[in-house]
Every structure is written in C-alpha cells, then in structure tokens.
Length: 154
Image 1: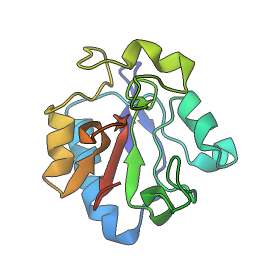
Image 2 (image 1 turned 60 degrees about the vertical axis):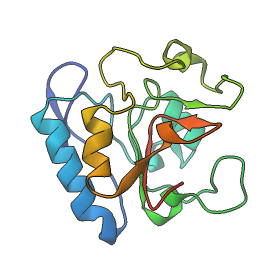
Image 3 (image 1 turned 90 degrees about the vertical axis):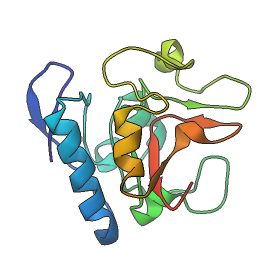
Image 4 (image 1 turned 180 degrees about the horizontal axis):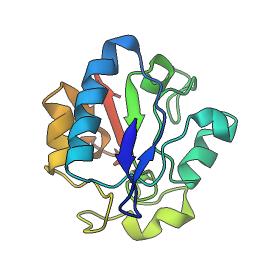
C-alpha cells in the first residue's frame, strides 16, 4: 500500500488484514493518501518478531498480529485481521490512570494534539473509518487507544 511519509514523500508499506476487511482498509487508506495524511512507517509485525511492544516503539502502523488483547487472555481483533493501529507513537495507548507504557509517546498522551499523524476525536480520519463501520479506540471509556481502529469493537 502506498502512503505519505512524515518526510512528505510517498512510500510503500504492507498491511495484512482479514479478507472481509480489505475493501474497508483500502478505501480508508486511499483517502488518507489523497489527503497526504502522514504515516511514519508501515511494516508487517514480522519485522519486529511479532512483538507488539517493539512495533509500537518503532512507530509502526500495522494490522494483523496473532496476540491477545491488551490485559486479557482473549484474542485481540488484530489476531483476526480486523484491527489496524496507526502511528502508535503519535496516537498512544493510555491507561485509565493517564499513563502509558511507551516513553517516546508521552508528549502525545493528552488530546487534542496538533501534530502530523495525530488522530483526534471527530477528525476526518476517525470519520473515514466510522463511515466504513469501524470503531476508534480513542472513544473507549477508561483506557484510550488512540492508534486503534477495529471492525466490530475492541
């Protein structure tokens, strides 16, 4: 998939999603590309030995990863290819107490933030996913997962 980088140049990356999610993801990422909305990096989590923490620390946009949901023994929507995380440094996972586990993302913990690649409540990235029936983790109560979009919830 071609995307605009933080260097304002087009790049080619990869996402693996469930076949049922392909049209939605292609449609949304086509819109992001048309808007020149920046993505830092887009590599398969295999490049990080399927380590979600390492992928997030590298600010990697990714989708499929066979893993449990954060803090749970149940499978994540990522394990089914029905979730995508976008620019996880700029859009961090925040615990209910307002902290996060990625030190490189601290400046992005509070919303709204005006910076390249940041997703804020009600912005066009959120709306583009919502129009395709996807939910944003930034609207969850308690924890906030600003990077996360999923089909059918968590």
